[in-house]
Length: 261
Image 1 (spheres, rainbow, N blue to C red):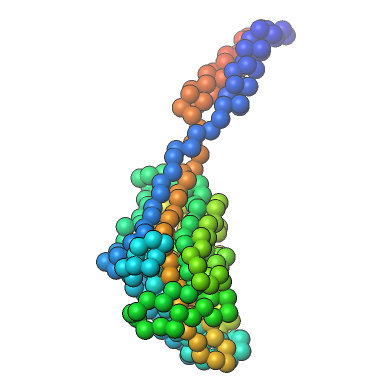
Image 2 (cartoon, rainbow, N blue to C red; image 1 turned 60 degrees about the horizontal axis):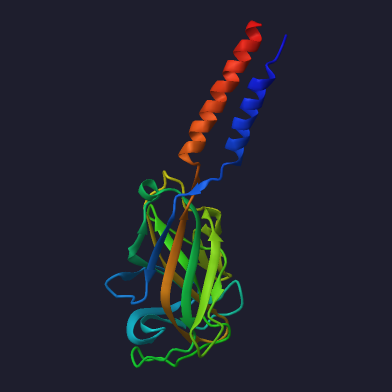
């Protein structure tokens, strides 16, 4: 049985070229908002464990970084030690911040960027401009198929007195879960959104959370320059697929010639 070395070299060259061909990113989609119109942002979900409290959200026309911004006020009633904490948890969605994986492509990863200020003090609603303890917990939220998902990792507005940027990169579907806020605090479960091409439309937004033990308190925060960058999942170059097919045909032809000999 003889092998034709020339055919083997040609096949190796084709397969090596295919293996070394870089994948192509389909592109990135950026959803952003720096004005936070009340017509576009809606508080769609709240959880008020223990003695609960109230959440106030509104657009402030000036004082942001720069211009208009989103003001959130958490007023938490007194509770006691865990597992009997009082708390407030809210999710607001941006009706213009939508992405459809079935149309625009599967999601590879997400980057979330936002500016926050833990000591904003607008004239209305009435507030203390408070930045209590570690401030306000917050993070990226989304809704898909009627289900709410939030970041597993909680971000905090712990820098008072100045606008500060927070950026979180490389978020995948497993970085989010369905939220639960109980007397033990904030957590997420193991149910994740579907970032594949068969996943439904996703509407993005923001969540906020605070808890209280023995004493009631109020925490205020401003948010500006909300931005979600969606990197589509990698796809092979069309040329790579063609070369792979060519390599497969060459391999089949070589095997056939070998068998006949």
